[in-house]
Image 1 (tube, rainbow, N blue to C red):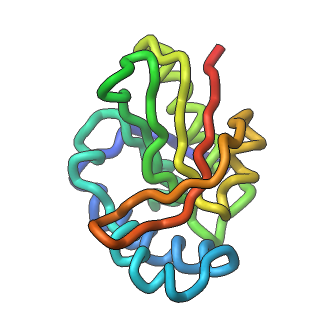
Image 2 (cartoon, one colour; image 1 turned 30 degrees about the horizontal axis):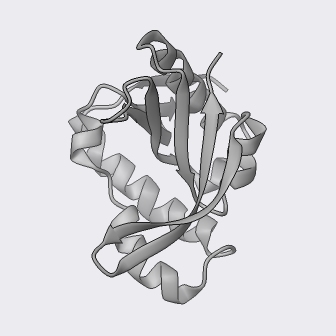
Length: 161
């Protein structure tokens, strides 16, 4: 397997959209009731153009196809903290190191920018993945996707060495 991780750009939007739209519903259905997914999936299963053009969002490419994506942004209030953002792995290729490769790039780039702590609002499904990478659970939370639409998540944190 020859996996390449590179910085995403606007040309990747359609392929990331397709990856999110296919993978999130399949992965999240085991941990969320249909009543949550029916309102949340249309909002979270779309690539975010601003994030794609940030320079801190990455794609994992295998055989010329995008099989994973994710990134990070600096916290607006604390520049020594960063937020892990919109991570996805192709649901047909789980447990093959794709997510780990993306987060390794996030760790490297965040450290280079002086970030000492990463915060993640994990799905219930991804909590074991983040824990395996060293993130500590800070407990359940709800994130407001739009007014009146909340999504249950797990707040997690990793101190970067």
